[in-house]
Amino acid sequence: MSDEFNPPALHPNQRFVAGELGVETAEHNSIAQTISAIEDRLEDAAIMESSRWFAISVLGHLKKAKWDTLNESGLDEAKQKSLAENCLAIAGFATSLRTVTKDDRSKYRIVGFASSKNVDRGLLATGTKAYKIASDVVLNSGLLAQAEERAKSAKDSNVNASEKKTSSAKSKRPDLKAVEKAVLDRGAKRRGYSEDESIAVAETTAAAADVNQALSMTEEEFADLDAALSNNDAQIVQQSWADQRNEDRWSRILGVLAGIGFFVFVALLFL
Image (cartoon, rainbow, N blue to C red; front, side, top):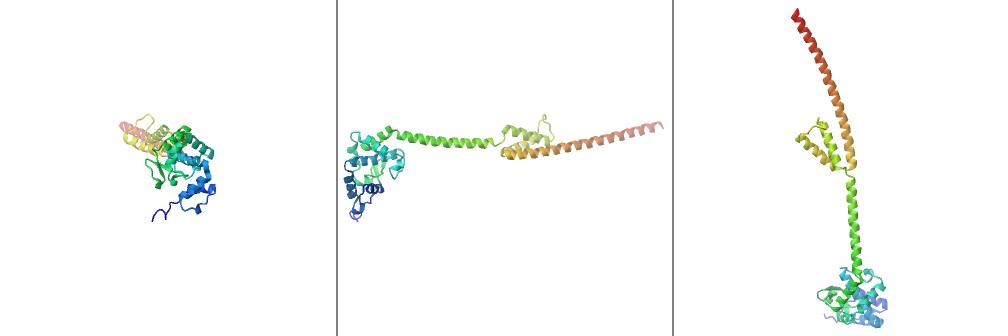
């Protein structure tokens, strides 16, 4: 079927503008009729309104944003019109804009931009005079710099939050040197070494394993481990004292027996 029987549908932006102006779109059979009715209502302000939609579209393209309405730009109506006025103040913009938006499907709506024009997809070309002027106005307005500054601030906030989280996690872990010394000292005591004695390779490997295990613990878990090791050390010390007392007791008994044997031997020699 031809376009006469399947006319292009109004863009939601165009329908919105028509509604704001009180234009009854149901009475029209084509976009051209609706656009003509809109411009009849706008009269001399038609070029300003067209410039406003175009300038905000350029702003969105430079920001790499996908907006569906003017308000999504974050600018109020006064700032939007100020941007449009600054574009219209430059010679050649109005003429180029009329040429660029000659197709009614590109008027009074948010459009996209590409290297080549494709009205069916809502795209206008970036090589036009109107686009170049509008992009210069946007750049000179500082709106892009403000957006970049907000994006940078948001990024810095995220980085700071991440650093604080990492710092907090590190602060909850036991100190590396303290853990290593504590575990090695306890390992040496359990294996019968004093602090001044060197530990064998096999013993060092076992102690290093204890260190790795302790480093993977939280502060609370390490405290529990330290308490358990302290209790174990106390038991080892008590056992060592008991063993030492047993050795002393047997030494005294053997000494007495040796003395008695020597006395008997001497007595037998003189009998």
